[in-house]
Length: 266
Image (tube, rainbow, N blue to C red; front, top):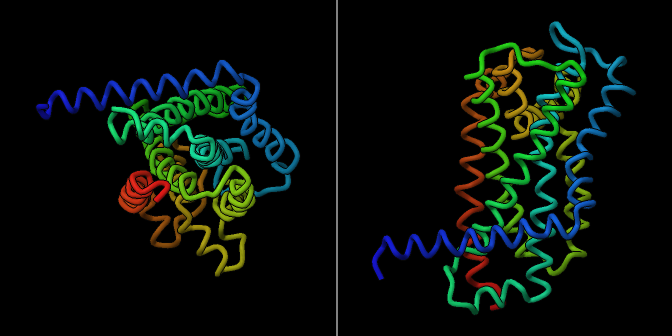
């Protein structure tokens, strides 16, 4: 088999798995819709209930500050869905059946990756629509806006491999609950909702280095919306670090996920 035919075989199998994962949307539309709407509810809660009490860095309203951070947090929320889907398939033996079939060995994880990225596109589109409805706008050109969305999807792609590895490593769906408990502390320990300068110095330093904070700061700058003062090195270099952080995550977790998949059940 030539390299070209092997690549075509891998793409075909990946698309088959992707369509299989996407078909689950039609089987449980309520669950999928809740996943898309939940971040909008968070925006309304924080913006409506607490926005008036939070001082916004620079000019603009709280929604202008909050929305770019919530875009990044929405990419992070997808980690749970990825892990749950992978864990469920592994615990039910679906993954083992796929591995026993004459198909590309990486199609299962690659198909999950493509399906979850498409899910993230829809989720981010809904969040952007909600932002426009609440008065949020980007103030730079379309090129800067596209770059900002590119950074958000790069973060999501990196977190996909974290979720795939954790899903393969989990003993069952029950183990996902432990990870779900950790999602909120990681999300709150960032610059998504507040300026890290308002935190204790040691806690603010951790928050600034959080990949969510780095991406949020970068997209705020690209969108031209309010952001906190770039006092530390990481905030002054948020845009390049918003590329470096996801690439580091991919470099670490992608090979680990592939290795775990190949050794599953051993």
